[in-house]
Image (cartoon, rainbow, N blue to C red):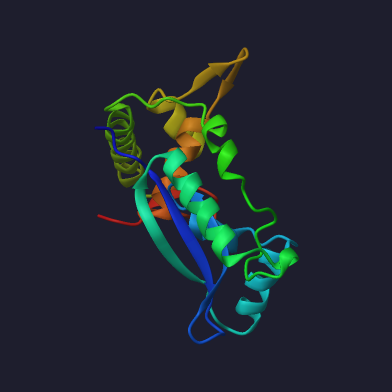
Length: 191
């Protein structure tokens, strides 16, 4: 059976005891933590900014993981319905309450068994190659170096693109294995 990468999470306000949820979402990867990286002017963003202004951090709770997208959407909808949204007298800053009847129509991708695992194995090999290139060049490497010398450039719409190596470097930075030097080059942070 294929691994299911989706999860449902709550963002909680540490200023209340116990910490109360102010947002429920579903996602993959770092989705639950991305809200603080890009604080917007939504109700959710204002709560995050207030928490940060108080010198505190948003609390993250992964409620359920290992889910298919459809399962995650259903759990998210149930929780939003249970807590309610602020515009209708509830707790959450979510903009809308999802309609569980529409969820099956939203999921459009069929993920064959083993496909996710293959992608993750390939990604680990690419990250290892980029990290090895960075280690071999103590002064650092540019994204274009990783793309060119590791054959990760694509030809999309007639133009050479380096998005894949940029994404791999971004993942390595998120993991704390690569950093950016003052010159803007990527350097290995691990031996």
